[in-house]
Image (cartoon, rainbow, N blue to C red; front, side, top):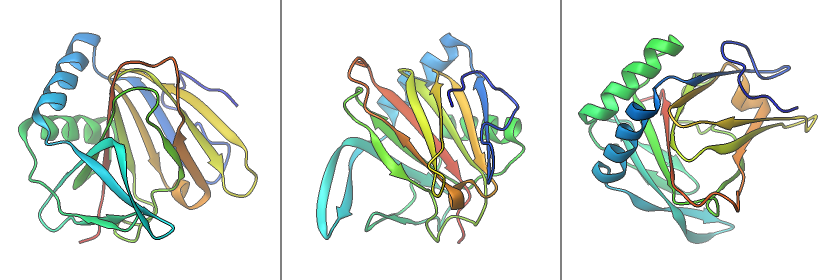
Length: 199
C-alpha cells in the first residue's frame, strides 16, 4: 500500500495509529531549522551492539530531554542533553498539532541516501507504553515504511522537508518501521523523534 498526503487520517489498516500531517513548516522556515540543527547540535556517530559486536554507524545522533530521561537501545545508554531554544520551539509545534506531550527527543542525521535504518519498533522499556512518537523531518525527502509484525503487510510514504508524522497507540507493539536506502538521494536529512520516556 502506497500513501502520500493522507493528513489527518490513520495510515495503518489495523493495530495502531499513524497520522501524517504533511508539511507543517513552509520551505523557507524548514530550511532555517535544518541549518540551525545541522550547525547547532553536537552530532556524534551512533554506537550499537549487534550480535555482541559494537558497531559505529555513519549516521549521527543526539539525545535531548528533561532531566533523568536516559535512553538505552541497541546496547548503549544515552544521557539527555538539556533542551535548547530551537528544540523547544519544535517540541511545542509537535505538541500543539498532535495534541500529545513529550519529554525527550532523539535526533538523527543521515548524510545521504546510503545511510538508512533497518526494520525495528520503538518499544524499549524506557518509552511509556503506547505513548505517541512525533517525527519531524528536515532536508532531503525520504521514503519511510511500516511492516506488520504478523501479516507482513506494508504501508509506505514519502516524508517531506518540514513534515510531521505521529505514531501512537498500539503501533509499536504490532508494526515495525524503517528508513530504506535511497541511492539517488545525495543530500542530508535530519529527523527528530519526540518521545515520552518513563523516569
